Each structure stands twice: as structure tokens, then as C-alpha cells.
Picture 1 (cartoon, chains in turn green, purple):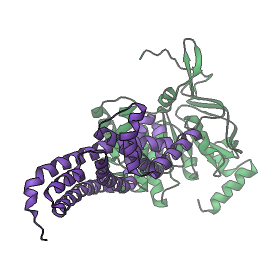
Picture 2 (cartoon, one colour):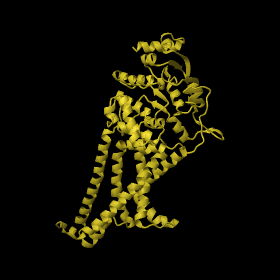
Picture 3 (spheres, chains in turn blue, purple):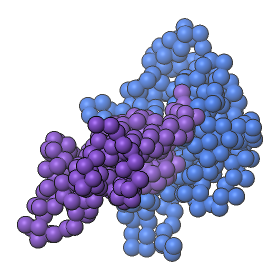
Length: 268
Length: 221
């Protein structure tokens, strides 16, 4: 298709840049003027109490839930808009879908397709959205499954896998779309404690391969080891950010301090 | 009086023709009312409250009136507005109309049973709404929807007998045609009943296969 469309330029080379994001659900301000910039290859840990707006930020970035106000650029493209020869216009649903497909997302509850085998879960979107030939999609899926340590689970159904294995399949499924950014929404929160590490290992590996990642998490050890930056959410605002070790050890804000202490008391 | 099933040796061609009509009518209504039911289910969760209300009202009416009345309406009523149909098409229209709303209820609760996260995952992967519905969501309604679906399909099968009232030559009608001339209603009606039972069994086998299909594919958690 010869659609005349080009990247909408932002003022820097950030992989993800969000400016002035607002999002309300009824009376609740989930995002209240949030700015965030993530450079290519950076890993940002997003921390805060539940309901503080962390997940909403991810959902606004990939336009799963478009913000009420504010702009999001992903890889230089302004989400929700299309630049044509005649000027900028609102993107159609189909165009938004195409842009969203460049952004991988991993959910707390995995959301694998239960009626598909692991292989089918991985090849569905590349074939349907990217129009990749089946043979090629299968090859890519096999390679991805090997990289998350599940090469032998190709023909298993999700119900036959442990939670940790399911989440690793979900990560592979997102990677099969060759995303530029990966969004993780509490990827280990639904897992039994002994299954958390296998998922974090896959995420560490991904970070070491320079994937740009935004990770909503309560795993402070992971945040400290892997994240380049930690941002702390409270009531829809980012109230503190910085090097993970510094924010974790020496929080400047009383709210951050209180949250960290609660986490520590829970033995994390 | 003693039963004498040898009469079946004479009348079986008529019963066979009736069986063929019963099977065709059941299949055609299933083929039309299934997509009809999916459409009703989707409209029941349409964004517009007006659409939702209209569909619920229509569902209440079509499931509330006797099927025979709808059959009469299609066969005797539609000609008044200029649409005269042969018996079979008018039976198809009447039965599809009310079965679509029964199936609509089945698929509606089936859709409710699919986790919201499934739609989210499809959206995040960039799948189109149509692909999401037909490849991902609807197949997952099978475990919840299959038993009521099959029981309604059985209702369709049995309900085809009503079409005798508008002269569709289905099995019950055929049985009646031959027993009024042979004076062996008991044997002939027993034979027709046995044929219905066999056809019902066919639907139940379909259900067993469906349940086996769904067993490994149950929602993971």
C-alpha cells in the first residue's frame, strides 16, 4: 500500500517519550500530568502502591487505553496520529493497531490463548498482523521458545504449563512481533514465589540484549540489579525518580520511604 | 391388538423421505441461527444502550411467543405483506428467527465467560477485532456454550415437527401421512420416534467430541 506517511518527529532520540499525560476513570485521576522519557536500550522500573497509576501509564503508552490528554512518542512516532502530505490527522483504529503492534506487552495474568498450543500462541499475531509466512513464523517461534528455555513445550497447551512457564511463553509471544519496546505489567505478581526467578532471568537476558523495557514491578532486587532508572508513582504522579539503588536506599520523599518500609516489612 | 412391525417394510421409503426433510430443515436452521445467535450476542453488548434495549426486547418477544405462532406468521402472515413463501422457506425463517435469540442468550453468556484479559492481549498484539472474535474469543466460549447449544439444537430437531402444521413433509408429517392410510399409527409413530432418538444421539456425539476438544484447552490459571 502506497500510504504517504512518515515518522512524526519528536525533539530527541528517546525510544519512549510521554508528555503531560492525563487519564481519569470517573472521579479517579489515574494519571495526573505524567512525563517520562526512556532512552533506547534503557530499562525503567515503575514502582508504587496499587492504584497509583503505574499500569495506566503502560496502557496509555501503547494506546490500549488512550490518554485523555498528552502526547506519547514511541520510536519517534506520535501515537494516535498520522502524518500525511496534507498534514497531521488522527490515526484510524487500524493504524493505531499497527503502531501498537510495535510495542510488546506482558500481563500479570499472562493472557495466553488457552485453546492454542504454545506454538500457535506465538505465530498467530506475526502471521495475521505482520503477514509473515507460516514456515518463517514457526522458525522464529522455535528460536524464541529456545531462548526462553521452553523449546520442548511447542505443542503443549497453556493449561499444561506452570505459571512461570506460561509467563515465559507470553514474553516470547510479545517478542515474536519484533517489538521496539517491551512493557511489563507486574509480570511476576501472579506467580508462586519459587517461579518468579525463571521469569526474571528471561527479563534480565532481554535487558542485556538492549531491549528497551518499562517494568511495573514489586521486585526491588530486580529493579536494583537490572533497571537503569526507577520511577516512583503516587496518586497518578511520578513523585520521585533516579538510580534504583539511590531511590531504594535513600528515598527523598516521605511517601516513597513509607512504601519501601512496607515492602521491607513484607520480607522483600 | 398385537404390534406388527412388518408394516415398516412397506412404509420405510416415506419415513426415509421425511427423515431427509427433518435433517435438512434442522441443518439449515442451525446454519442460519448460529451466526444469527452470534450477531444477537454481540448486539446485546453493543456500546449503544438503545441497541441493547431493542435486542433484549426482541429476544423477550421471540422467545416468549409459541413457535407455532411464528410458523403461522411466516406462512400465512407474510403473504399479506406481499411475501408468499413455500412451506420449507417459511419454516426456516420462523425457526431461525426464534432460535437466533435462544442461541443469542447462549453465546452471550459464553462471551461473558471469556476473561477480559484475552481481549486485552489481542489488542496489544495488534489483532483486528474480527480476528480476535473468530479466532480467539468465540472458540473459548465452546466449553461454556456447547452443552446449552446442543440442547437447543435438540429443540430445533424436535421443533421441526411443528413445521408439519404448514405442510412441510418432515418426519412426523410423513409418519402421519402413512399411518392414516395404513391404520398402523402405533408401529409407525414408534419407528419415527426411534429415528428422532438416533438423530438426537448424533447431536450428543457432536457434544462429546466438542467437550473432548475443549478439555485440554481449558482456561489456564
